[in-house]
Image 1 (tube, rainbow, N blue to C red):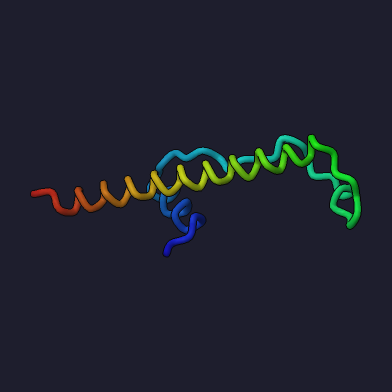
Image 2 (cartoon, rainbow, N blue to C red):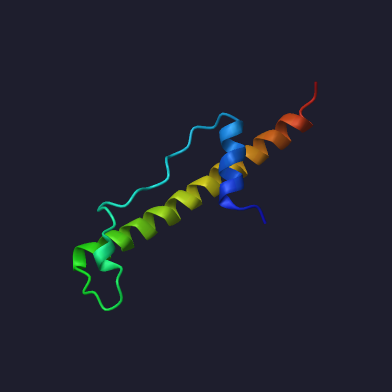
Length: 80
């Protein structure tokens, strides 16, 4: 199975315009990464939003890659 990073690289080389990788709404603060630290709800929400955005980004890359492969196959099979 081809990884998302490989798919993204192939699409980029083919000149396909893609959405940028999502970024976290809030900057990561090291003090909340310490064991036992109380993490504010806003930080938890930012992590959940980022996880959802990354999943949507990956699905978008997968769809674009599949379309790219179909287009290449169609171009290859087209009569000259």
